[in-house]
Length: 110
Figure 1 (tube, rainbow, N blue to C red):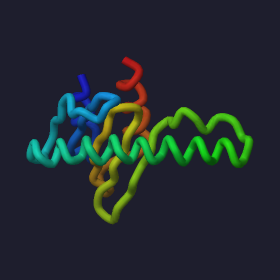
Figure 2: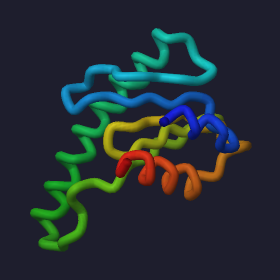
Figure 3: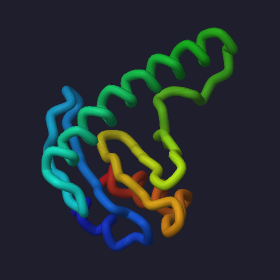
Figure 4: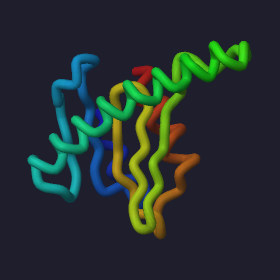
């Protein structure tokens, strides 16, 4: 089901993982070892984002920051996007991040 995200402009790879970080599946234009590394990165980064959002919510007393709706790490050529337990790599010149984040949200709900 997550494979359909590869049809989106600029998406090079997509993976899913369990809450404990175990790699479930990965597809795209990367070797399996890189897909597994992407999963590990996404799991750890998700944990960092959740902790930071908890602190932001606590210090500002503003509601609506948790649970996280997703995160994006943008580099010069590539961007990593994640929602829930899904992560994908996007080529900056080709991808539309708003569209990809919406698709990740839809996939995460199903």
